Amino acid sequence: MIDPIVLRGEVEKIQSLGFDPRKNLFISRKAHLILPTHRLLDDANEAAKGDGKIGTTGKGIGPAYTSKVARRGLRVGDITSKDFISTTNSVMMSQAKKAKFTYSDIRWIGKQEIDEFFEAIEFLMGLNLVDGEYFINDLIRQDKKILAEGAQGTMLDIDFGSYPFVTSSNTIAAGACTGLGISPIHIGRVIGVFKAYCTRVGSGPFPTELFDDVGKTLQKKGNEFGATTGRERRCGWLDLPALKYACMINGVTELMMMKSDVMSDFQKINVGVEYKAEEGKNTKQIPFGNNNDLIPASRDFEGWGDISKARHRGDLPENFNQYVEFLEGELETPIRMVSVGPDREETIEMVEM
Image 1 (tube, rainbow, N blue to C red):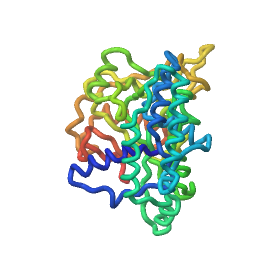
Image 2 (cartoon, rainbow, N blue to C red; image 1 turned 45 degrees about the vertical axis):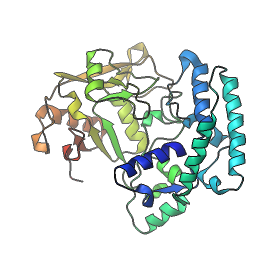
Image 3 (spheres, rainbow, N blue to C red; image 1 turned 180 degrees about the horizontal axis):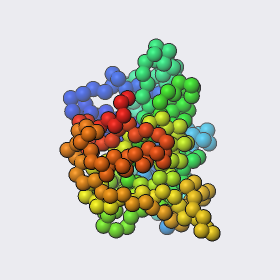
Image 4 (cartoon, rainbow, N blue to C red; image 1 turned 45 degrees about the horizontal axis):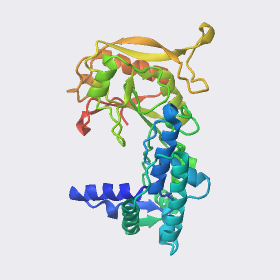
């Protein structure tokens, strides 16, 4: 999914810093376009749900996926068609009417927004448009290294996440295959990136969520605000069953733990190790359903103090190493790196790559 207006803004921001990303940026012709009316539909759908809203970013991604699945989507490759403007105007008029029907109080799309969209389309036409599946597979045949970065987290996956509080795409490692048009045989390593605690934006289940000062401290010190919307992220202790589930679904071969330093001030640190189930039987599996009533059973760990100055594994305190070793044992996966701060030099190798 590509919003041409947002893409142009990001490119221009990088250019303002003295770099020109256009020569190294390649856009797949099969990528779908997010139209201004997709954002309108997003707002209308959320407003119509009232208290049952999902907590979408409001960027039009869900409605754009709806258009894609309904086979009514417009793709990057369509922008060179002589009928593109008339077709797009027709589609947007239909979507705007649908948004008004869904929620009558929704604002109407303005001419300025339409003009801005088509100006961004002109900008998009000046970028490198490629047949992505051929492009990437040709690089693989040349033995080039390919690093695919997924968006969002496993529990937001449309199929395996905490449905319906999910996004509209496959956010798991397998999404690299369907998103890029490559065979699974080409995936050699799957790196799982996780925080030393848990966060979530918007609605949905969060068994280890903290509603006290500890949660607020995590949020403030970890700067936990949504990258897209700026909304406050909900914060809580690490949810081990969810993390283990993510490792299984993605086929994770190695882990990297971020933001370990955010918990430096806590004397006690908890980890949710399983869920309390009915009839007194606990489970380490995520049950079917939205799981809003899950209650975690926790294990305590001693805090590790300030680790922000550590630069090598030998600098890390024993309490921190015990936390890492416990997680590795439970997850049966090595934690190869940990971060003790946001900068490159604040990333520590725990196991040689």
